[in-house]
Each structure stands twice: as C-alpha cells, then as structure tokens.
Length: 312
Image 1 (spheres, rainbow, N blue to C red):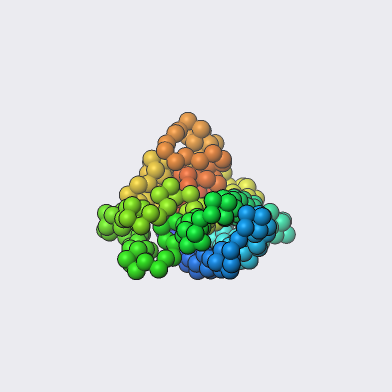
Image 2 (cartoon, rainbow, N blue to C red; image 1 turned 90 degrees about the horizontal axis):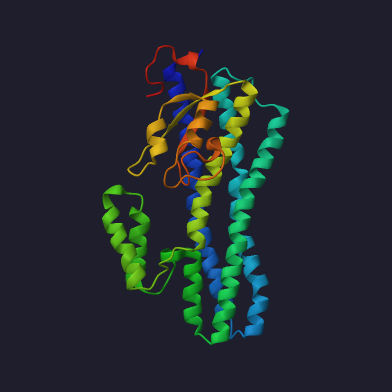
C-alpha cells in the first residue's frame, strides 16, 4: 500500500513529465511559425499576383502549412507515447496494475488521432484565412508589403516579424517576460503599444493563439483520457485532484485541490457547478477548462488512512 508521501512523489514526477513535453512542444512551435511566416512572404513577394493566380495559390498555402505546422503537430502528438508510458509506470508503482496491456496500444493510437484532428481543424481554418486574405488583397490591388504584414499577423499575431526595430524590441520583450507575473503590467503595456502604434493584430484570431492553446489542452486531455481508461482497468473509483494553483485559477480548481472524491461525486459536483472558462465535455478530460494544469489521479481512499488532507 503506497504512503501519502509516495503518492505525492509520483504525482510530482508525472506532472513534471507533462510540463516538460508541454514546454518543449511550445518551443518548437515558435520556430515553426517563423518558418511559415517566411514561406508565406516568399509566396506573396515572388512576383505580381493576379486575382486568378491568387485562387490557385490556396494549394501552395495548404502545402506550406502541412509541411511546417502539421508536420510539427504530428511529431508532437507522436511523443504522447511518453505520457502513456508515464501513466502506466505511475500506476504500477501504486500497485494498481501489472503494466502495459495489448489493448493500450489501440487506445493510445485512437487518442492521438483525436489530438491530431484538433491540429488539422486549426490548419484548415488558417488555410482559408490566408488564402482568402491573399485573394482579397490582390483583388483590391493592395501593395505586397501590406499583404505580407497582414498574413504574418494572421500567423503570429503581435509576434509577427517586421523590419521595424522598435516593434521587434517590444516583441522580444513580450516573449521573454510573458510568463513572469512580476512583469505582467509591463508586458500588457508592450502588447498595447504593438496593437496601437504598430497596428498589430488586436483581435487575437491568429494561428499562434489557437496552436499554443492546442499544445497544452490536447496534451492534458490525452493524459486525462488515458489515465481514466487505466483507472477503470484497475478498478479504482476514487480520484485525487492535484496540480498547480496560479493567481487566476478557476473556482473549481481551488475548491477541489487535494480532494479525494469518488467518480460519482466528481460527476455530480461537475454537473451542479458553473464557472467562467468551464469547458463542455467529461470532467476527467477537460478538468477546470482551457489551459487547466490540474490532473485527476486514480487512488484508493484506504491509502491515506486518517490523513485529513491527502497529498497536501
């Protein structure tokens, strides 16, 4: 029977595995989006494009997104095997399962297909955005420099490349400090300057935004789905909710942190609760909502004995 201390150690180890993959996929995405910007710039500036030619450029745009963004997405999703292996190893150490079983491969492959489909949806959306934008620009006779700027921002938002040194200095500042709470006001001011002075994407409907959200949520949802499947295999019907709380953590995450609840209790509490950012779907998969960093760990209440606050 694992001790509460051992449970907590396993939770931290698995959490670090997820965070490491999340960060690595995000770092690679940075370069992928810059490469895609460059590919689109070459397409627009190769020569004067007529409206009729712009229609045919959709194929070229789709190929560019498939060769950069979707290739990166495929490679990232392939690494979800590491997450599945981590779940199995964690539950083996808890004494809940014997190890990997034949059915796991089929489950993992299907969950990876679901995750990759999310990236394909994003890619299809931005093929339309870029192709339609190019056609409308050529129809209106806009200068190629304006078209390039608009398409770069459709890819990377305020992080789009430009020849303006002052703008790029702000971009680099935001990249460096966007995850530092102590610099939040300065980052917000820099972003506002990019919006207003340098006419950067204010709406935020860019490929970067949706891709980074998918990086985190697809990974976490894969982990939650596979963990739930292994819990059912092990016959575990209780879960401890754990993860990192931040300044703007949602009420669900704050109130359920470290709580051990049965599956029925979790589903009932989920159905009877509402909060800003709550996602539709299964609570074991979507948890607190978009960008949530919490997990449900399958446990047996007997492991905690008389501990008043398991895991804390």
